[in-house]
Amino acid sequence: MASDHSSVLITGGTVMNRSGEARADVLVSGGVVERVEPNLDANVPAEAAGGPRRLVADGCIVSSSFVDLHTHMREPGREESETIATASRAAALGGYGACVAMPNTDPAQDNVAVVEFVRLQGERAGLVTVAPSGCITVGRNGTQLAPFHSMAAAGVRLFTDDGNGVQDPLIMRRALEYARELGITLAQHCEVARLTDGAVMHEGCCSSRLGLPGWPAIAEVLMLQRDIELVRETGASMHFLHLSTARSVEIVRQAKNDGLPVTAEVTPHHISLTDEKLASFSTLFKVNPPLRTMEDVESLRAGLADGTIDAVATDHAPHAAHLKDQDLAAAPPGMLGLQTALGVVVAHSGCSTKRIVEAMSWAPAAIAGLDATHGRDVVAGSPANLVVFSTEGVWRQTPESIVSKSTNSPYFDVDLVGSVRHVVHRGEVVVAGGALR
Ligand SMILES: [Zn+2]
Image (tube, rainbow, N blue to C red):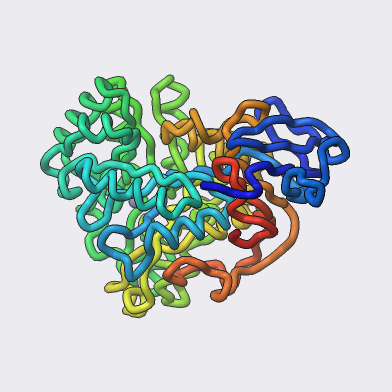
């Protein structure tokens, strides 16, 4: 898009790259990073004299913008809860430069026409790269393989039936065989449906005390274990969505030790909240997979810190108020995530800043197949998809701050730390001073 400010100078920040961090100013021009050097501010013309627009980054980190592997944008079909335009606004404010759009739309993203619609709506919104995922099976019904070939030819890299696990091992085995040939990655939502029928929260002491139907950890563990064996047999790569149990971390750690091509993600809520939250009977805390125990939370944090879990992914799942305003059994699972992800991860993960950038930008960009344009080091010649963020400052989310169409955030009463100050997307400033342009 045309702009008076296609040239931007980010001043006073600390640039975070794979090689380490260094104080430097960053000059962006024509959609790419042009120079990364200390004291550029004094050596290029002032804004008033026709020089680049200044973004002050004092006390902040400058890195490649975040990439979310797991965004429910709800369009097409569920626009009362969210649209690609409103999700894009939330994503930009959260420091994201790209989101993988989950395929459980209506119609589902199981063919090129729907996938192209989602991508185009993302381009129209113009705030983040929207990378549609494709379904593994037609209509996410688990019975007939979706047309991988045509969707892959249209640029889809990640295929998933998210919301549903692929139950049938024959279907999953075939899907992996095709995926290996096409060089695409399958992303599994690990849930054996027979074990979670009617469940509303983690099965354990808390569910017994509250008298609520329990969702056992083994429902996740069994499918994860099965699919790792299928990966071992087929050689295809697989990504595991929103892992939630301590045992899952151990299983993925072993699979990686065995050299298998697997990756995994964890959500901000699974490293910050426990099943005790359900004692409020609030549907804000109903999510799939469910919030687990403190032991699970601690294992997930450790797995994220040591790289067993590659990425943080939001599982941003907006639901309109009339949907969440039902009893726990009837309300749909899911919670917002895009605007709070960084604040949760800084406050609750225990990860270093470099590890946070790796888990929120570099690793997910590679898993999503977006690494030509996202998750790059901030060096001359890189595409200018950048975030400027602070790792200090305690805050809590307020309903008024939410730009999603829905307000089902679980963080109104939880301290968050660190915030997004500026975002540059394709060389243009889309967030400045914590506000949309
Ligand atoms: Zn899922």
